[in-house]
Length: 166
Image (cartoon, rainbow, N blue to C red; front, side, top):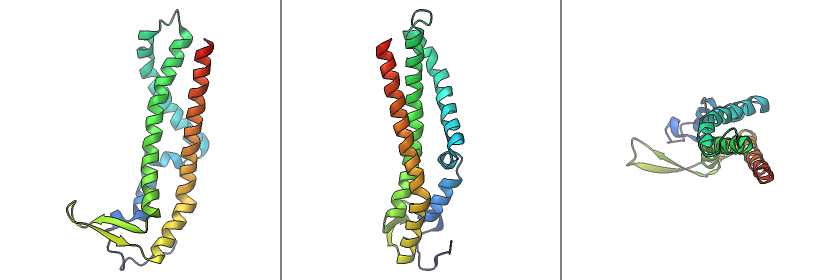
């Protein structure tokens, strides 16, 4: 990717959308969404399993394991799914923030602190660069997150149907 002239951009480097994208992409947590599907799902399953281990004793307080094993498992799974949903929401918030920064034609930035915010109108070169990154890098990530939400909703709906049948 050709480097757009930085001399015309008054935004500090760490607050430029492209650099914010690079930083998010390199972070331990937010990079999960960029893994291939099996690795990504493995991370989510680990979060769910750890949450399930935490919620299982809570569910056991409501449903005796010997009398209601199905309800115990489903209620613990629902609690674990709640934690997993919070994790996916956090992933989404980070990536949607980057999307909004790349999509916007104006960049709000702070020169030296919270009290001196400025707005810079992107040049056509910056707009084009940001649009390319948005289209080819960020949109597939957001699509994957959307599919994750659909999968979570399907699992919760399936769990609800099983609950009714118990």
